[in-house]
Length: 318
Image (cartoon, rainbow, N blue to C red):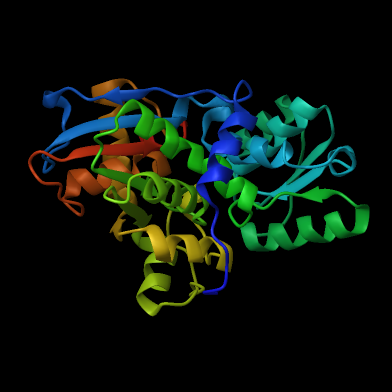
């Protein structure tokens, strides 16, 4: 694993050029001092990826992957497995390229996600009880039918695409001290942390996972990839049983710490985001705010903190 080559700064910058015009440069919103979450000090900004096309940051990685492919690979059509947001990103990529996209969803995925996939022109197929089963089916379909498979978090182009968020944060707030990032499979934090450390090594990167899906937390503790026996969280986009070597290598080298929050704490944070800022987000998008509200991450008095509000939705509001 130590021999894995990490995504470099040139790849992040190339990704930013590729996706320009196809994804949104989302705003970095400064919270008023009166809006700081309880238990938190310092200054807070929110990177509003909930306003991204398709409703989450996943469009960045999917579009960068699409634009990294050759014409023949694109022409074969796209396939992936997703709990929802990555699937929407791939569906959007297929829509941009005007090629078929098939998304395999676990049977637990919200039906609303499938309907949104169809509106982007993708085929939504419910198969498998969780993402890992759905992914095996997607890989088999790719092999059998010659489709081009796009992994949600263990792909260099996808990681590079997600890391463009870090470039934008630093452009808008060069003095940022710390960035808090929710973790599912780890592609978002792998890209964001690696890009941040390449440009500003002093910036702290803090990951946030559910207590019921502490995949990267346990893997870092063991210094090896740990596969969880079960998942106990309602935050479906953070419900990864294991990460992959490429992703883990980036996280192990560039993430400063990982803290855990409960589903109830994420829900309370989502309600705070709605009450204070009028943002309707899914549970995962409230994870970083939950870490601040609970004091799991305690910034110092003058710390400039940025949190990535990673996805829109309504499940955070009960």
